[in-house]
View 1 (cartoon, rainbow, N blue to C red):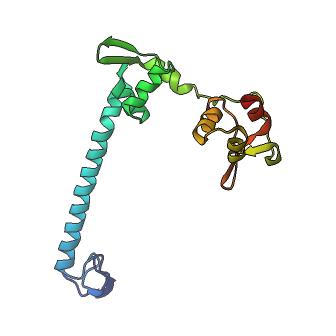
View 2: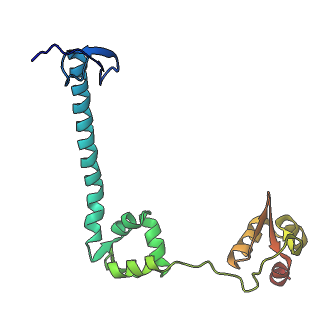
Length: 183
């Protein structure tokens, strides 16, 4: 259907200006119209594939969320860690699990929910107050004063939850606590 109307338009595909003979013309040529159609079809296929992939990836987690008893692998998927990390949590008695066979361990969903709702607190040293750097030793000072290796000192600090103050490249530990432990 042609008309005597002449309108200046911009092509929706190549953005060139052209003279349209109807009010509904969107493309400057048949080539631009077919390329635009191909691009729309390609994008629709890509979008459909991406949504299908997202559904497939989320389906196992949705299935796991509905279970009352979970395997170690299921728990690892839910909380986003490795199976060995789940076994470490079980062995530390923070998560209750039952071995129903030699190689089959199950965890009750309610126990997992309790574990996730409890936020573990770092053990705080009873003497931990806010210390200034003048009240502290550097780690090298402690090593020289008590003739202790670096790894042994790190183990003592970690085991006793001694607060460390970091300033630049140096780490400081309170003099009072170190003197009590290493004397």
